[in-house]
Image 1 (tube, protein in one colour):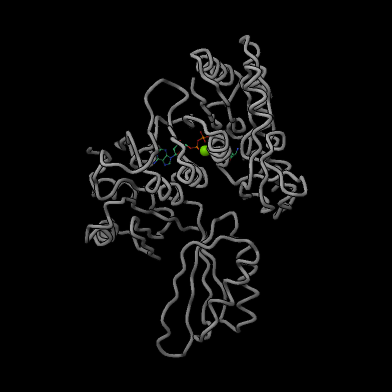
Image 2 (cartoon, helix red, strand yellow):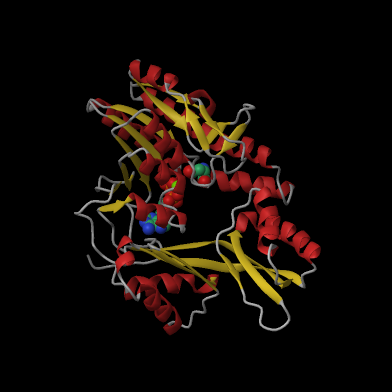
Length: 406
Ligand code: ADP
Ligand code: ASP
Ligand code: MG
């Protein structure tokens, strides 16, 4: 008998028929002699709808209230799913993050899980029930509801799988697995049979939203075998696992992109020690995540420009803080560009190959795509470009690195 955690994303539970179909899949898995825990997302579009309601009231909604609001979406699905499972003659119980004992830090709207209780889940399993957990949420030490960031139900599932030492965590979604690029963007993209935790971690952090980055981090840390597959058919999915000798040996394994980016530039800052520290200290204190940073060398007037990227969602808050820092430093001014995106190539094979970055820059240039910022690590190269050119960039890079071929 295996313990299987099954997570179903928004499109997999988009309406009542889908919820019934998913309930059937969970019950079948249980009837094959397994213990099953289901984790659900909000019905597709629900989180966006609730977010839009908040923005109809205020430009900058209070984050604690956002968490109260958004956590309701997953609650709705979990109770409906429990009813659908019971209707099939199987025991079930819906549980919120609080009821499962998912304790997080207090970073509202992007909280990190600190611990998980297992008693309530074990009790349900011992009673032969299929517990249905509302994903994406927990509570902080004040018992206030927190959420884990967009896409965070994946993380709920993997964290539960780790806490209960599950045999496998299955992430059911609307594509058949992890592909060499977003299948909605590149028609000849190829499904991978397996991908290493490290490569998946890079892909997820660079925008491949098929898995939440923190979910992959948990899976890697606790060695949880993860399978990404479709809830719409029975095709085998992609196994995310430890790197081994059988894995594909290609230099570049995938292309990822992220359109949820904004670039902020402070112009004419005095070029002296301590300036970058002054800027990023204030930003860090506001709990904002900065991604790429580029500082120009001052050539003549001992003044320099500094640019950095943040997510679009955090850009207004970041702009406000940067404006204050800029005034304090007597800089010339601040500029924000929301029409930017990041395109990246990922692959562990890059570590031992020269010329991969050069090939990427060449492809972008041949396609008339201007690079605004660059960042590299051992297993990835990322470029910030105009958002209008990102689809073409992903396709061109996919072609150039021949990712459609095995
Ligand atoms: P869910 O609601 O099931 O959590 P998401 O929308 O969060 O689903 O994630 C699935 C989507 O991820 C796919 O529909 C696809 O467009 C997108 N995606 C981006 N990059 C990739 C990739 N490399 N492989 C598979 N899907 C990807
Ligand atoms: N409902 C949340 C979102 O849309 C969490 C999730 O689906 O994983 O981001
Ligand atoms: Mg998702």
